[in-house]
Length: 242
Image (cartoon, rainbow, N blue to C red):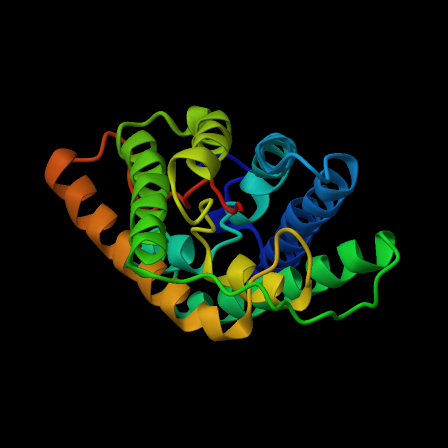
């Protein structure tokens, strides 16, 4: 492996990268959502476009920057799948998830403060219904399939661009606007703004995201049964997304 392979980086450095990356991702999601709603208060479609483009751009940069350190998961589903396929020591799953959730919460609080809100403003934006939950299954399925397809075919260098492009598109073709990330979902409960989600909506979203990740993994194994490069290489990803 190369000197900057995540497998050769200390756990402490990897956790710092995961926490920081998830925080900046959520700050981008929530902050751009607030800015979009402020700049385009009477045009929800334009506000969503602004939110999606900003999220995709920041996500692309974060994956490129932090991928060599931690794999740039920023997403408990990605972390779980990576461990399932042997790319991450299973003992590291819990620490990864903890720092991802803490980072997501910190990112939402940071965005709130930057725009003059209280650090924590619990969201009242209820998101639910069969269509929205199905959208989260589809959004997460697509995200993981993009990552796994590229990694298993030895094309990991394309992950940053592909994931960013997918997330921007999924903002628009899913009814949920593609959260596709349990940590980001939890973090966004702390901002009662354009990108927020009510705490009562979180369990359904997390369950749907988990299902999407499991199905994507099974499909990826069927489509690409023999990886071109070992899946012990950490997945260079992510997520979030709005």
